[in-house]
Structure formats: structure tokens, C-alpha cells
Length: 166
Image (cartoon, rainbow, N blue to C red; front, side, top):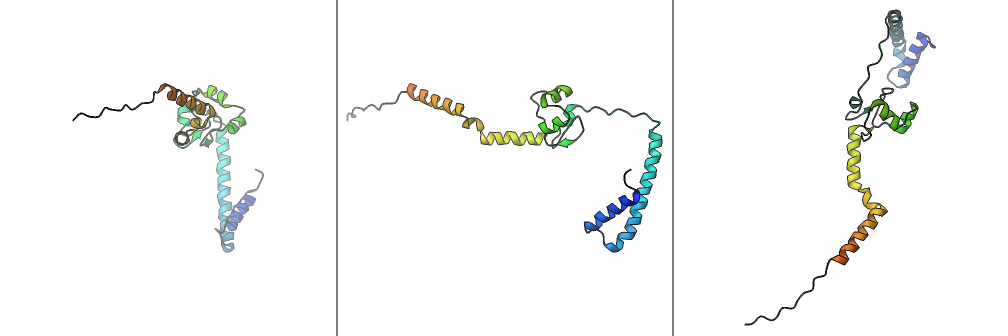
């Protein structure tokens, strides 16, 4: 431990004073209470370490990739962090890219590495914007199609009807 318990207690109390949650009058009693709480935690930690040294560690239970993608978050299967989307930048921290991450955990190529709500929002946005209609190749194809229809569709000529016999 780099800090003593008293220093930690002092830092916690000072943070509460700075956040205006604690008046300077209450400082002494809160400092004593925080110190005793930290001391109790330290003794519990020391006691737990001696027991933990005897028992072997159990390996973490692997999570299936389908359970890692929920409605509002996606959990990185490497480190357990939660995101709305697994970005390329985060995967680079683990020295992976999306292709190797998918291969490592058996995730299908077409499965988005994003929360389900994010995926739905993106689909709705694409349907609203319709970016394919703004692409130059799409515009050329539509112009050709319109020109071809204009050539093949005969124009109607109106026939003059003979006057009705009365």
C-alpha cells in the first residue's frame, strides 16, 4: 500500500469538504469514523489474503458471445468492459482487429459489434437518409432507365372522332 490509512482517510474527508458535502466542524468526527472504517477493511483484507493463499483460484467462466450483446450494451469478451459499440480503437488495446476478435470468439461476420439499440438506430437513419440514392452510380443508372423508358414508350396520339350523326 503506497498510502497509509490515515492519509487515505484524510484524502476522502478533504474531497467531501471540497464537494461542499461536509462542513469543517464535522471534519474531526468524520475523519475518525473514516479511519476506523479503513482500518477494519484492512484487517478483513489481511485475513482474507491468508485464506485466499491456501485456496486455488478458479479460472473465469467464459461468456457466450450472444450473451455479451444486450439491448443497451456490448461487453468486450477480452476484458469485460461495457460499451455501446466495440470500436477498432478498443480492440487495438488487446492487439486485435474486428476480424480476429470475431474468429477468436466465433462471432458471425454479419453480426454487428454494437448494442441492439445502436444497430436499430443506425438502420432507421439509413432508411431515412437513403444514401444509395445520392451515389453517382445510382444517379447514372436512374438517368439511363428514364431515357430508355422515354424511347420505348410510344406517345399517344389523339384521333379525331368523326362528328356524330344525328
